[in-house]
Image (tube, rainbow, N blue to C red; front, side, top):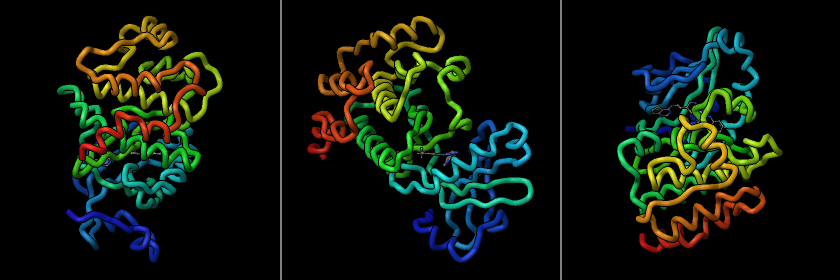
Length: 278
Ligand code: AK1
């Protein structure tokens, strides 16, 4: 399978259009977009085409959000971040040319069983690296969770953001229509929040990958989950190593300022230990 490695160059001479692609099967859909597997006719390269209907965008008043998403994603280039190679539009739709990943997400993976610890460390190393990169560009992800991480060729993770109202995620909205699981105390309590919300989510995701369920319970028991998050009340099954437990506990602090930096996490003994084993 061919991949587009430096499509900026391929695409610099002329603008892509839908006719440059052989559009294949449907591989996903969101509130406003539909994603297809596609092949660039000229090179045979496989990509994921996200096609968004302009009328629907306008009706829902989210044109601004899509513009912002494209603006952000076009700046991102990192091995663990799903690439956007380019975009184009015609009268009816906006089309984003995305890197194609084989298709499963970390969420799909944990549906069958928890992930072995030595695989989780490899995954966390990649997520920390991706996050360090995007925070370096002053981008806060705001929705780190297993559903948003694609598993690429050779177990290389690709962070993405499948969500649609990417920049309309004020806590009050989320609490009514979303899940609490990944919300940090400062967002639940509707306080000031910054990039430390992503660090928190990293801790929740790490727990979920190790244990198979999120640390503060599930969506059904709303009030209970809420209180557990505020009080940071959670425990580990016995089979999880001390280093892994310590890694998660170091992250899940009520006070955002007490959460570690990504640099500190990168050098945490738990992740270091797995690097030495390779
Ligand atoms: C649809 C997506 C980041 C990301 C700001 C964004 C999923 C997005 C498309 C697929 C590739 C599928 C496959 C295989 C099966 F920092 N819209 C997206 S991702 N292969 N589905 N794509 S389905 F990277 F997280 C970030 C920051 C915006 N945007 N948009 O990821």
